[in-house]
Length: 452
Image (tube, rainbow, N blue to C red; front, side, top):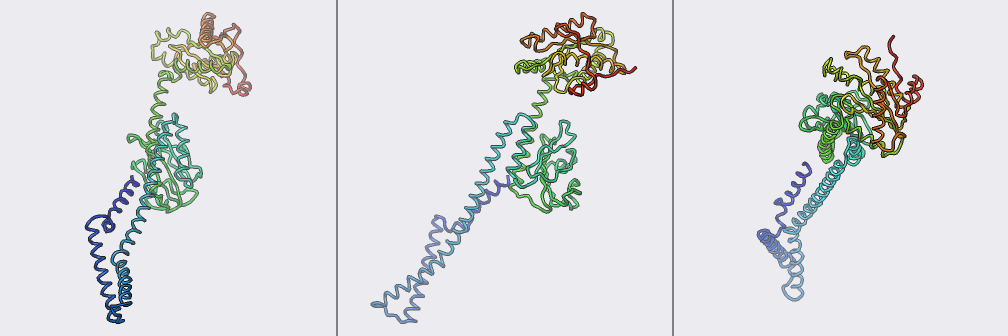
């Protein structure tokens, strides 16, 4: 890193030849002794010339004291000239470099603490939103007055979005796809001192804030771009080397952690999703249902089974059967609320979970599904088919397993009743689907209207 190179240069400077004159080597001591002897010799000659020849001071009585004083004064001056001044200057320079090296090493230690703190924080981020929130706080720590932001690519790596900005805000980057960013295309940091330069990023020009400078640091994992750290500043501003180093470190570790989180999310999604229909699989629905049971609130479930599905498969082939399952899944998802859970229980059987709802809401949703399926099949490329539904809610059984059994039995009663109907576990008829106004008032999809 840049900071480590600077620290090494300072250490080398402390060992440079200009400081070896004050170290403890024999050669240095002999040189200093020779200079001191020469200085005292010159001082003695000067004292003799001044006191003996010029002032004619006698070498007896008080005259000896005058000669001694002259030699001491001139000796001190010559010692300072030959040794003391050079040593003093070298010591001052060395102290300055020691202070600089100490400050640099302290800064390096602070960077290591920041890196360690960031690594530990990222390891505790188990979702992408938590990682993004941590990056925002890191921006504020590294550059409290700067305008930094993180742009992340979606799972397809086709689009970029601003995930988080530093607290001060600032002009946002206009890049919308990863490969539109020059830093991503080059695979390394790009700095643009001014947006008016001929080689400036095209996305810097024409911003409402006027001319500006920018620094762009790509986030890549195994050569694949996942985002960009973008920092904007005043025109012709220069990013300090230390800040640039820290932002590059941030981009590096965040990119690595993001790739891990997305891989984990993909694996979890694949583990919880039915590969044919794209809805929850049996294990995932079971986990959701157990969570609803532990919460202790009200909820309802419905079993749905496609009627005569084996005959459809045998007559038209499994590919047609798969298309029928996917069509039914799409119809169900469009007919239920956003917070409802749709899962494939197995084969042609599905389970629908309705949090914070009772049997009436669930049965009405099943009727909407029946009506929507009839409308959808009018122009579909699959043969006509219907579905039977069994509904139960939290009041029908004290445990999740027992409630599943109750709903399953209600669905078999629907089969026995002629299929293509909804049966509630207590035997009551399915309620009439709500009108469009009633559905809108409760946040529910309205029942479709068949043509003709």
